[in-house]
Each structure stands twice: as C-alpha cells, then as structure tokens.
Image (spheres, rainbow over the protein chains, first blue to last red):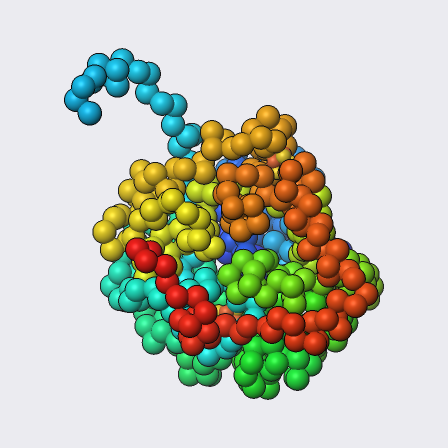
Length: 94
Length: 396
Ligand code: SF4
Ligand code: SF4
C-alpha cells in the first residue's frame, strides 16, 4: 500500500481495525488499534480527523488552510500522510 | 496510640507517590472457566478456589466507572470469555461508552451466530490464540481437539471483516515450529501474528523446566522469523516477543504497576497486573465494595509500587529505573521471594544467576531427554489440578 504513489487526489481513510476518537481525559485525539493506542499531537489529530476515505488530500489541505487561516500546508500534509500510511494508520483504497 | 499524638501531628506528611494518570487500559478477566488446558496458562494456579464471578450488572458498572476516569482500551479475556453468555451485552455497553474493544479468545465457542451478535454489539477486534501449527502439537499442548475448530474460527473472523490477529505462545515444545506456524498464519490470511514467548508465572511458572527453550532454539526461531518477514513483507506483520530470560535488562513491565493498566479478575478483585494477585502483603480491593476511582487513586495496594520509594538497590540508585521500573514485580517475587527486588532478568541484580542457571539447564544437550524421561511431568491447567495441587491458602 505504501508503495502506491500518493497524489493530491488520493483519498486516505483510517485503516481497517483502527479508530480515531477525541479523548477528553487526555485532551487529545487518540488513535486506537489492536493492542495499542497513540496519542496524536494537535496537527496530526487535525489531519487524521479529515481522512474519511472520501476527501482528497488536496481538499483536506485546503480545508486545513482555511480552518487555521494559513497557506502552504501541502508539503506538511503529504509528509504526514506518507508517514501514516507507512505506519498503517491510514490506508488508500484503490 | 494516643500516647504521643503530637509526634504524628508535627511529622511532615510522607511524600506520597506521584498521582498517576488514568487507567487507560482496562482488562476484564470475565471468568476463569476455560475449555482448554494450556500448560503455559497465565491464570493463577489456585484459580479453582476463587470466589463467585461478578454478575453482569457489576461488569457494566465497572465499565462505566472506568470509562468516566478515562479508560479507553478494553481487553475482554479469561479464562475463555465466550463461556460467559452475557458477553454480548457487556460488549454493547462498552461500545456505547466509547471503548475500543478487544476480545482475547481461544475461539472455542465462537459460532457464527455469536460472532454476528458481537459484531453487531460493536466489538472492534479479535485476537485468536493458537497453541501451534501442527494439529497434534496444538491438541497436545491445549490438551483438547481444537485445531480444526480454530481453523474454522479463523475463516469466520475474516468473513466478518475483522483484522486477523493470531497469537501463538512459544515455548520449548513448539518454538522449533515457527516456520510452520507462520505458514499457517499466512494461509489463514492473518494480518498480524504475535509470536509471544511464554512469560513464567501462573501455570507456566510451575512448568518452567519443561517450557523454557534453549538459547539455540530461540536464536533459530528468530532467524526463521526474520527470513519469513523479508519474504512476505507488509502483507503480514510479525511481532516476536523475545523471552526475557535471554536478555540482560528486564521489560518495563506494565510501564510500572499502577501507571496505566487495571485488571479486574473474575471475582471482582482489582489488580495492577493480571498476575499481581500472587504478590504478598497487598490487600487488593474488590469492585464489589469500592469504586474504580477509589481503587485506582486511593488504595494502598495500587499506590504501593508507584514511584520508586519501594525500590531496593541496585534499582534505587540506577539511572535506568525510569525506563524499566525495575522490571516485573511478580518475576522478582517468584524468583527471589521479595517483590521489591530487581527483576532477576537484569544482569545487575544479585539474583541474576537464578535466571542464567535456568537457561543453562535448558541449554544442556541432554535436557530434552531428561524431560522426556518424565522426571517432572507437565501439569496441564484444569479445575481438578488447581484444587488438588494448588489449594487456596487460608485467608486468601
Ligand atoms: S492460556 Fe489456555 S487454558 Fe489458559 S485461559 Fe487461555 S486458552 Fe484457557
Ligand atoms: S538495576 Fe533495576 S532499574 Fe537498573 S536496569 Fe536493572 S532492573 Fe532496571
């Protein structure tokens, strides 16, 4: 899966068996998966929660730039998605 | 007591252990009943003498209270959790509360009807345990005929679109079959395989001489696993849990007792680790008479091993204590008789020779023959063996 080229129109979603949720007790987004959990930092949580398998990376980026009134997030988002695919937090269904 | 009250009054408050975060991981051992009889079973050897199992209502209350504190990962195990016919309502409530729910099962009792109901109730994940890849070995080690059944269950798990997670406990009698085990896992379409070397407490401690592999076996198994990993790539992820007897530093067991793990055993006893019931002198609370909040934050038995005030040398002054917390308290107690000692796996421990001696016995070229001669028979976990060989000590 990680071999697949990631493009601006790829639509990443949370990997099967994984679940992302907001945990008030930890004041963070947490990624839950078999035998583990990862507490995400703020930006990772913001990207991950937009990865619904239907929205493209380009749209996710645009939405983040809008939400945080900034520009040029594209490289950061791509880098994160790449890492998350490597770690199998995210998947891109063909 | 009243003789000199001022002494107490003027003494500075004893610096307590640091207040821990919430019990993020909750493990419910729903029952000690199990149709299998694994010789490496991690349940206490005297399980037959424990009190009545909690009722459904109690388990639901435990879930609500723990979730309110911040618990989020939930393990449902046993024994065999499927022997409880209220597993479905327990899963349903846990799902409603927002837990990520793992079922840890031998697969015995997992019919299609039940799996469908559990899926419907919101079960997130299933971990299926296998004793070995070869039918004979599997049946011998679990002392029942369950291999075929498990193959069927593996197929069902796939059919219901769960990630397929296989757990195989490794030991002297099956570690040479790692290749076959992995082939089997691949055939079942496993996504993850955990090759977990036996941890020596409970029944496994009793059977340690028979179960501890030789260093040579461990190294061969690791090489086989590496080759396999390279061959299959990411299609199937393989985890190999190195047996700590072969290491020079202990594992950071439970990330320190009382830091994130909370176990509730079948009779409602709350424990900082599922094996901790054996630790002497700690009066572990019961959820029948105390809330999870009280248990986690305000009982002496949960506070006892928090921080490092309980540590002895060499741990106390060791710079590595913040990494491994001195290792496993249960292992320290079983081998040295004192739970506050360093885990003897550590080569800085004055008791490390106990570990190296056990490994040396396993390494003897004639070790296998001696064991075959039946000097000390393998004792399988069963209700009968539990009550006859390990009667409950008075007052426990
Ligand atoms: S280790 Fe074996 S006997 Fe023990 S609870 Fe698990 S399946 Fe049952
Ligand atoms: S002496 Fe204690 S703290 Fe230091 S490495 Fe060994 S077990 Fe860990």
